Image 1 (cartoon, rainbow, N blue to C red):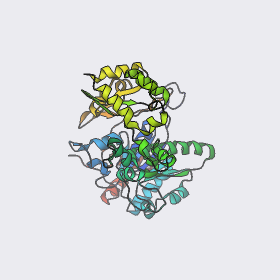
Image 2 (tube, rainbow, N blue to C red):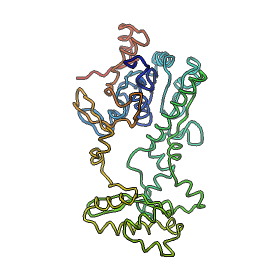
Image 3 (spheres, one colour):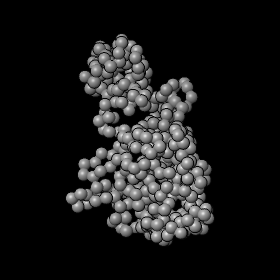
Length: 407
């Protein structure tokens, strides 16, 4: 895609070809973002059912919103990699590709004969990224891993549950952050590897673990544990407060500056002179003190928006806590165009979450429709690999490729 004035590509990753052999979320989320930045994504799906994401979560008229969200704009090649001919086709595509991404359990790609060592022999410039539950080595590497296991082993479930109730059980977060966090780490590493290749001409192998990525994403709980020699109570500050007509969050750092702002906002400035309250360490170690002050003050308002206005006037970080439906309608989400529509031939107008990239000189964002199973078999095999229509028909008759026949 060239700029209309001939100044160069209109998207950052224009011309980059991605060979995507991923399913569900951790891989497809990453390759969707790569496509949003301009890369061409060839999605390899197993026959006859394709990506497992096609059959999970919300289904409408045979389509999964989960799949639609994460696969817009990709091209589907439904290819049987358990056959020698299927592997041959995959290898031909790997030669033409810049990046290959897979999210099988470690060992699967090697057993197929499609691991980085073999692919890099036929394409030394290839960048390959493997996303797995626990990485390619270590005592748990051979295990299947999902976001739930990353949430459990990283400490995130513990912190989430204890933030809600210090005496209650661990609880999972409300979204698959183990998957999406790994996807974002993979995205960054892939883009860095593309830059490295531009300088050196060499490919690279990237090993991304859901557990590693989620462990890395914790902003303070790990360090609090280490520095407090195992006393985790100071990590339990949970800035969620119930008002008469909803919930709010107020991010109050117990440091002196935020403490003074808070006391002014809630009209409790006499506590500035209190010996116990005046010590920062007391406020850090007893987050319930701040919580009870805010919650008690909030109950004095019939409408929490009135309380939020006072907090804003005093320079405190605050917001009403919204449901997903309310978030969609928030003016900031709308101004940033974080919801866009695709015109699906079966579903009609479908609202989809847009990419968060906002760039000054190049374009980005969601584009294209989610593919049907094997929708682009003929296009990919004929235009990229030079197969004739007779060749393609033979491959289909032999079960090497598969195209879903819509009724």
